[in-house]
Image (cartoon, rainbow, N blue to C red; front, top):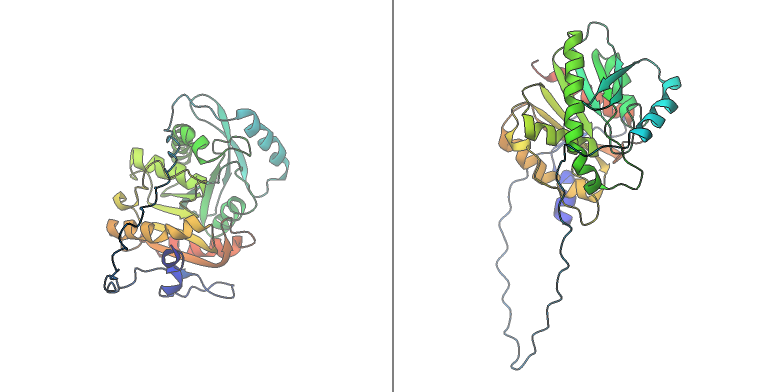
Length: 306
C-alpha cells in the first residue's frame, strides 16, 4: 500500500494564504500509468510439494447501529462538569437525544454567514483542545456561528466496533443540533466532523441524506481499529452538497491509505466545489495546528456560493 500512502505527495498544490511553513496541498487523481508486462515464471520442478495454506482466522462479526444502545451518560456528565467552568466565548446549551439530555456549546458570530455543527472524535467532548475548541471559536471569529455537540461517549478503552451501535443515538443528536439552529433562525447549516465523529456524520447522511445541510467537512476520516473494517462504505459518492476532506501529513496509516478511495468517491459525486486537502506536518488530531486547520476550513467555506 506504499503507493496509496504516498499519493498526496504526487498531487498538485493549491496555495492558500496561511501562516504555516508549507501550505495545505489539494489532492487530485493522478493519470493512470500503463501496467508493466506480466512477469513470466518458470514452472516448478517436478515433484515439488505444494505448501499447505495457513487458514485465515475469521474476521469479527460487524455490529450495526442499534436504537436501544445507550452511551455512558455518567461519563458525559462528568466531562460536562469538568469543562463548564472553563468554557470561553460560548454558551452552554442543553439538548436531548430523545431519552436523555446532553450538552452543546453554541458560539455566536456577529452577522453570521451561517452555522457549523462540530462533532468531536470518540471519547472526547465539545470543547476538546485539539480540534473542537479551535474550530468552534475560530469559525465564530470569522463569521460562522458554531454549535459543538457532545457526541455519544464510552470509556477510554472502547473501539470502533463498540461505538457502531451508538450511531443511532448520534443521528438523534445531529437532528437535535439542526433543530436548535433552526429555532434560532441561523442558516445555512454546515456539518463538520472529526475521526469517529465523521463515522457518525457519515451514518447520519447515509440514513437521511444531505438535504438539511449545505456542505460537509470531514477531518481525519476513515480511521478504525485493528481488524475492524468499516461497517459500510462512506456515502461520499451519493452526496449532493460540496465536501471538504482534510487529513494530516502525519496521519494514521489507514486514513492515508484510504484517501484515494475517498477522493474517487468525492469525484464521482461531481460537485466542482468539493476538495481533498493535506495539512502539512499535522497528525490525526491536528495537534498544535488548530489555527491552520481553521484557516483551511474558513477559506473553503467562504469560497462556496452559498
